[in-house]
Length: 212
Image 1 (tube, helix red, strand yellow):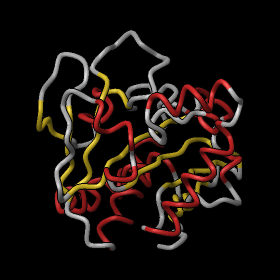
Image 2: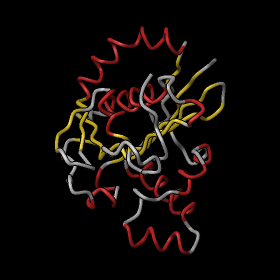
Image 3: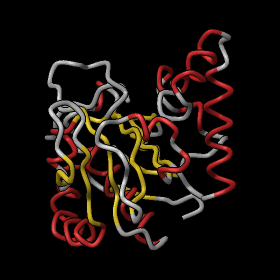
Image 4: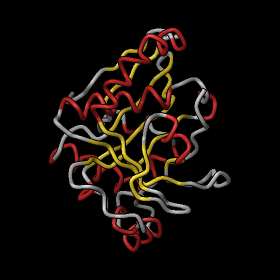
């Protein structure tokens, strides 16, 4: 099987899972999210958000393909571009960090290490851009499979550390210099497990991952 990771663009945005393509949990403030859902404009709002971040900041996501089939994705942006970020009890995100908002691997591709590869690709992109750390609000629940928030157990398994604890929404952090060291340590093992993985920038067995 061939695997490759590319940057999210307006041209490949439709390759996100259908539910995630329409989800604006992170991209809009809660009251605007409700309005967009009421009028059926979430697709447009998602595209507008990606377009804005690409223009003003740069690459804001990665999609992983297996044999040219979209298998998962990750989205990230400066906290100032993520209205939902201020609503979490463990806010704010640190000033030196970029916020990882969403990361999901489709069920049929789970437990193959693809989530870890996506984190690796995000870390590589942001390190090249001089970012010091990635932070994420995480979901500590083990039962909520419909959450738009990345599971805490997955993030902890790939090197994130808790910077602000909470019984449900802990904020986690990955230092990018640590990520680079970790990348070097596990790259050979990943290649043995996954085969060759191609990480291509545009503008540059883990826990299950459910809708983000």
